[in-house]
Length: 278
Image 1: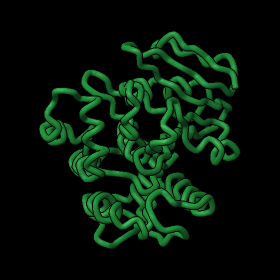
Image 2: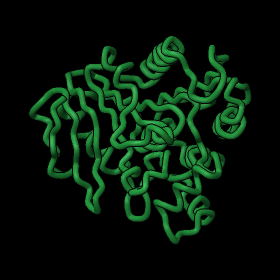
Image 3: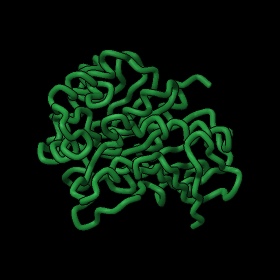
Image 4: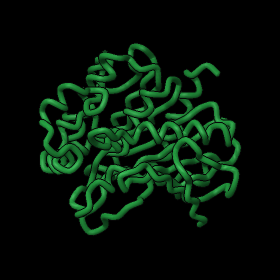
């Protein structure tokens, strides 16, 4: 795989290899790293990683390249540059949230806009599961008309595993008060409040297994309720979100099978294409 060293986010150049790994310096030892397959297509697929495993914690790591490569000629898979803030590799998840003075969403959006110019893509779909699903919800909200296709995402950082959340804040926000940050910046740390208060002009397809009970209780139901949807699943009153509460073949969190993923992706694309109007 060709490795392309870019000079910076303001001078991205996609005129070379159609498929390559790109690394972009961000300063302070950080970089934005992504796999890009930039063929012509009306839709650009963007994927985000979930958590690393303690025995498999490395950077950069990408998600859904194999599952999407045959379905999308225009594809970008981003690693989470926040992970490079942890020199001791104790942090397993950071939700693409960055830290003080650093928000990965901004360079990510710059790379997406540049890629759209290369591929001719008018539409962008963000895909992620678990922690990557949180990133998809957050960054899609910044791009009107885009779609977030999420599988069992976190929707409120404060409602996730205490030790994982504490490790992130200790590394990415040293000296800051975690409680104050969570309360002050819902657009960064709480998609339930953010979507409820701001009503972003994007689309969401939310797939949630009933076998993942903690995420149903702590993340799916609060987010769904905040949209005004009274039933356990279905389409939100505004018509821009579809919720699917399904019984997966495998119990637990993040256990969606390839067949289930393909089924929900097809439903998400059908929903999005029927709603976006162009």
